[in-house]
Length: 271
Image 1 (tube, rainbow, N blue to C red):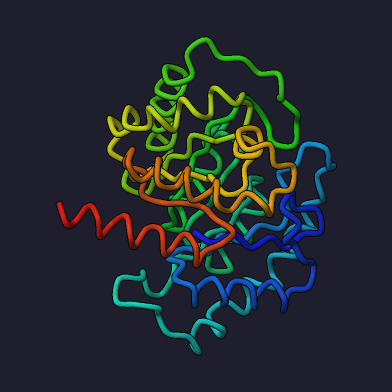
Image 2 (image 1 turned 120 degrees about the vertical axis):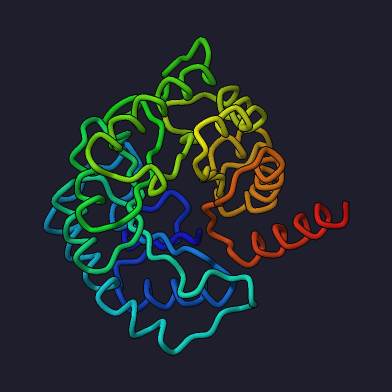
């Protein structure tokens, strides 16, 4: 899953408010082998105020409206790439989700933690998939001091509850993806432990997305303040996540991730 930020305050400094430039970024990620492109118009940073629903929708329209036209001129990198790539939209407010789905969004990457069933109902109505991310409360609110006595027990409780909520709203269970929410309301030890123990989440029989790219936990371990300098550490977490059975990796550097996954898959196949 490649990341495209249609904003000017992305933590990794790769965002743009120019719709054409954002679309070019998406196309470069597809050319690099992305199976999914995740387009978001609002940064998850808690030290930035939320933008209005209208502004978020306007930013998304500029990219999503030209997605199919841009894809028509492209070809897959290899025979294993999902084609056409899945269009994911990183958002959480129902008003924006509805617009994104009307513009062809196929996967809603919802960072709200699904506090109620509204987003699941929207996904069901449009036949889209829904990614449920673990967190401790509404987006854009700082939770850097959040503590967990048992992070894996919390994830198991959370996903059991949210899957029941989503399916009760009419969303098919096979339209759900789970995201343990690295760096969201978690400390360094929580993040490292959940990656090590990721296999415990396979009890839900759903794909697991691991958003490892340039995360704070990598900076903490390596002493790197600049997110762009964390790509090698990202590959390290990707390898650990792949060993733990994660199926989707949300990354900025798609080419590096593509190469890493190919080599790791080849090693596994050789056994």
